[in-house]
Image 1: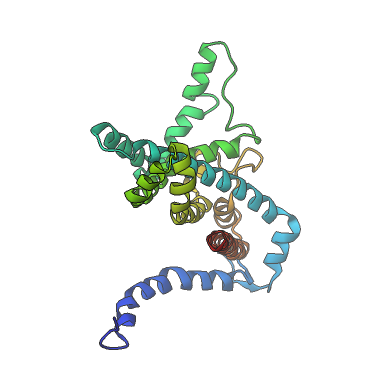
Image 2: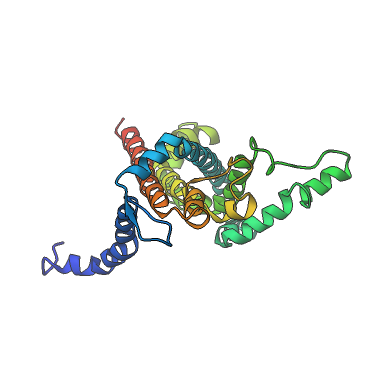
Length: 288
């Protein structure tokens, strides 16, 4: 159906475009401009060109932060997607118990990141945490997962999984409930069991939902800040210094606005590339 006036769609989209321009594209453009300067918020900015980018890449700091962010994000995305799908399959049924479980699981997603981080810090803290107290009570050493560089990133990933699994569950529930019953009935008549129906019928039909869950969860986990700031402050030994926390350190601890802006630009490019790669992989799978 064609609009009565050719410009009507553009007028309707104008408020959204204005919000994106004001709160997304303009700050990103300003970050790129600031990345070309050396500025400490106290003295006038000094133009240095691409020096901030050169220092970030030459020091190896950027690669280290990217590797940490990718490890935490991929672990959290895979875990939240798998857990969300499993929960959706378990509670995709009528009844008060299933409704209660759905509400309980999703409630974690609407709780603030700060509250979630404080809750898990109370449980996992090496000295005063509940887990350490229980282990000491039965004769074991304290639970130092947040104090060990080898386990701290994955402890944060576990917290993120607990937080966003309800989001994945709701989306997968929507996908499951959109599967035509006639298709499942036809598969049952052909002798397919529960596992065969899921593998050959349900899972392929959930591919668009899975792609959406994976993409949005990846973007969400890449932006995690509160949980790092409260639980580990980027430690131990910078093992949990992710992109957003590194940008925070550059601005508010080191007063390096130019270098932080360069990290913002690189961070945006990484997010854009990973999202494009994920969507390309999904479309290629659909074309096969």
